[in-house]
Image (tube, rainbow, N blue to C red):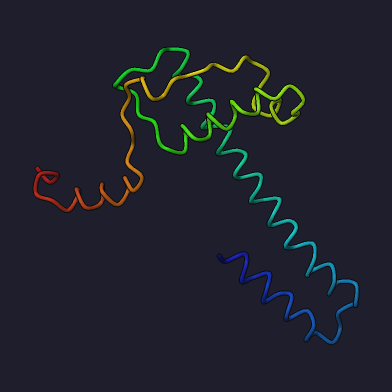
Length: 132
């Protein structure tokens, strides 16, 4: 949110400067949003790769009811499975060269972390049972 408004304000302010070189006006308005997009894609990729590694490590051990997986973990692992199924897709090498392990999440018993678990935990912390 901050970066969006900063780039928008900076782009607008570059046109108000008297000493600015005309090239910097264009570069500021083009390069900054492109850098923000690349940054967002990189953060999404890192989160996706970590989630994939986490589920793969759990799948190697064997999923049991003591394991906790989020909805993002499961959907991300299934998405990576589709990448691995495609023989010509070069994106599968971004997740590692090891073999993809198929996991049947419907029949496996594990703790499904609720979607809004942080809000539920904050509400639980306010209760008397938590303070004991």
